Image (cartoon, rainbow, N blue to C red):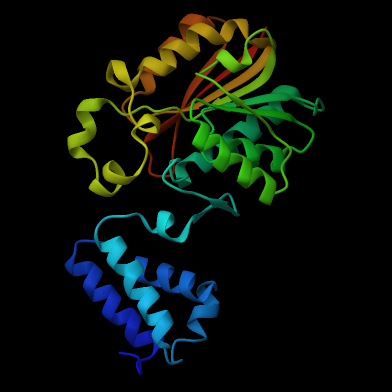
Length: 286
């Protein structure tokens, strides 16, 4: 194989991955990682000969992915909202659906706060830091605090904040605990929301590699939303925005938690790009 081209190596890898029930597009992403290049850079090298060291490395990555390890954990990175985040097994891989929490959040913040730009924003359960860091980059005048219950996750998030030059305060603790005795303009969260009995329907790639503490929650996946709805009335200002990502079957239940805690608020369930319920926003404007 050492006299073969990148193109031929990719063909081999794609067929091999399909055989193993994996996504054949992973081959290209892994080859880009081997060559430290992007899609167009790789396309320009398709007929280059692949040298033995690169071939060995590529084979090793392809073999790892064939066993189920996500591409993002192999390459150590994932794109989110146009920026590159470092990821490892301590954090969930950022999903495109979560970008819609950012988009919807910014839109509502502009409507709710107008010219008031110096907002206090908290991201509860930050994981890789994707939400907190993106909000700081998109709304630079905000004071952003990110929390997580996992020390390892906070270390990954700190690394991302440093490399993406985002000034964030990180706090260790469970749910709203690190935020108490303070008042916030904006609270965003993508908490664990999968019910334990849904595990049997999930991809083994997710189940065997991503942190379960960031995936599963009790009370059919609803416990953390219930707790947030109970605890946040003491933590938000008279005018505030709360936004949470949800599982697609949880819209009504989560919306009802917030309607109960904030009877005067505007609570809405927002669908994602696939037309599935994905976010609940609660706008408080007393």
